[in-house]
Image (cartoon, rainbow, N blue to C red; front, side):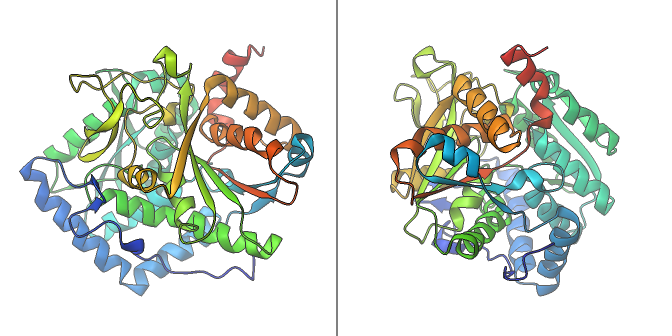
Length: 412
């Protein structure tokens, strides 16, 4: 049952004064795309602003979230985990309980409604961990739209349950064999499809990256996470958290959480994929690697990118497919450079250990992506006082990762 004290608010577009009219968050963002795509992006920008100003559109989205997505998702007090760590009190924003098992449905449903409003009947999407693909397939099925999802073959192998879910929902899953065969390459192919079929197709981008207005659109549709969590923490604890933590791949779940607290005295902490460690070179920590992580352009936007001295994009690694990406959303780059948010990393082993700890203390099996955020809470909590509060965005559940988890932990 929905919390009767939880206010529902319409989403506001272009909040917090970023991006500017050119789509920049400080020095980051913009549109680095062929001229042929600019009219489509302009059309999308106008359509989105009109939709956000239309109470009927907003009400339809809100109603679907309440009756279909399962919003508001709860905030859970992790009592046993907090007691075991012996420091700060840890709370979990339960996006794993949203329909399809992750936060991705918030954005997918909003964009699919926008596509329908624009008269686009064909959806093109990309996916890494498969959760955005499943969410796009789900929203397309609900609204009667044709859906095509590009997915790297490496990710398809490690996310077989989500591949089957997409196919069961009537979506065409297209394997990508180029490059590293992971998320970066899936985005390349999805954008190529969209450019070719721009008049009939809508590109349902899954993370807070790409050319303007996508980072803004994704942030705004995911801001429901932070808006809910802020009021839920006040209702349950009578105060705001000291720290809000989320994992960061492209950065959609983190920017959604952060947006609710950006004007408050709350530390915002993003956790990147440390893979096998910075020195190994096998990671996806764009901010943490001083050798290769620096500003650059990738897939339509300017942000921090893992690249060599010649500007060639570096290969990345993470045990979690959703964090295995060489760049990060431009608003995260802006928040980092303005020191409004701070970014750290968790290695594969730290994330796996945190996953086990949460499962065995709270009975919650988190996604590998979310386990990176849990790992940071596990590190921080013991050194904080017992009256301190940490809020972790549990962005997804671990069903999709069981094959990888069993292999990594050598569970028969």
